[in-house]
Length: 262
Image 1 (cartoon, rainbow, N blue to C red):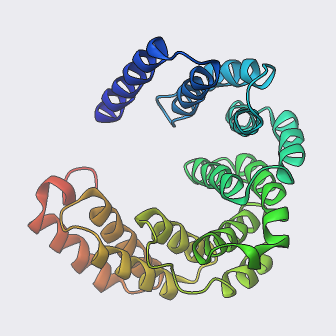
Image 2: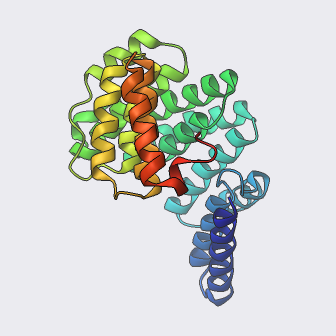
Image 3: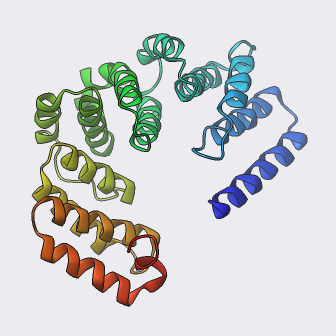
């Protein structure tokens, strides 16, 4: 968290310096939206400050593109502040107006924020917002690039999971093809967690194995994948494999595999 706060302060300083040098209203607004996005960072952000920035920009005479981005960021701020009625109103308003890539980016943020919460109500509310934003995307899913099509279907499955529709999520996941060639580590993690939520532990094992192989040995992403694999082994009833994996990680990488994990 200390490193995270250092990066947040450095990013804020960078944006503020560029804002002082900006000469056009549109560029100033773009930098302010970058600041709002920073204020939506989990644990170190200030969602009420993000809300204030977005409301001001959304009511000003900037470009249509910036207005759309401001409204989506305002949705995220409202969701983070548990103001779900306002967030849902914006979701319905923007769903048919914003390009699919921007809608999916917003859904991705909602997904990962919900994943970091243990609140069942938060899961359901965020899942509902995800479903509203994804509806127009899924209505024309065949028009998307393969990578966006894959992510739209994954996010839809996870939204169904969050809202308690396990059978719908299982069906949606069955339509998720192989991961795109340029899939991010986070995509692998989200897919594994979706399988985990459906108690499809053997499939979660396969995905976490792939994730660990792709990661740089000793990196935090690699360690997270190893931990995810150990947990999937354990849930699948392979306790011996889980123990072996944790012990090997602890011995080879004591800075990652000891302490809190033990």
